[in-house]
Length: 226
Image (cartoon, rainbow, N blue to C red):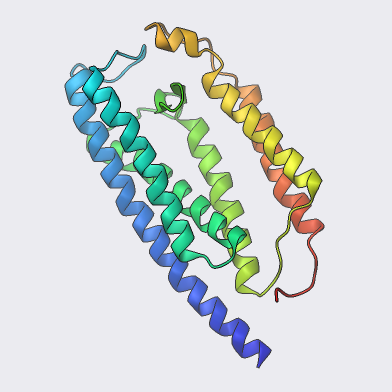
């Protein structure tokens, strides 16, 4: 009976995972199409930093749109998962696939980015995040792997409760990654090209994120979820 239940959960997980990924691919196109219009409006000669100042109504709409995007991705994770960590894992998968396909769709539509080191404006809340395209893509790949592993654990009826060390590594990693994007916000806000990107902070952040997941898996309780 237990093996049958596990098999049923695994089948249900595959179906939910498929639809979350399909949604994220489509949503990535929606995001890319909005950026196509914004670039035609503000960067008709082609996108490049420094960041141009947006008209106030457009800036407000863009900030609300970014908040709405996060709400949508969180809602997808909440609907797809059952337990809190499973929901967060589906959110990570949705976010990662959405972000990766956002750049793939831009490449198809605009033939941009021309390379992985092209700079982009990644986010505007609470301040502009800027960095080379390779950075968010690498982060998304780690998120995709982490989310998929956690979802797989739940499909097998296993626990996922990261210990304190995993939390510390995760928070530290997020801190390094965030600083790599917003470390020179003043230059971005004043229409200047930011300082060289801190690839060292990117690598440290990715290492901390991977170590956090690895430590959580090693210390995971072998007992099945209730």
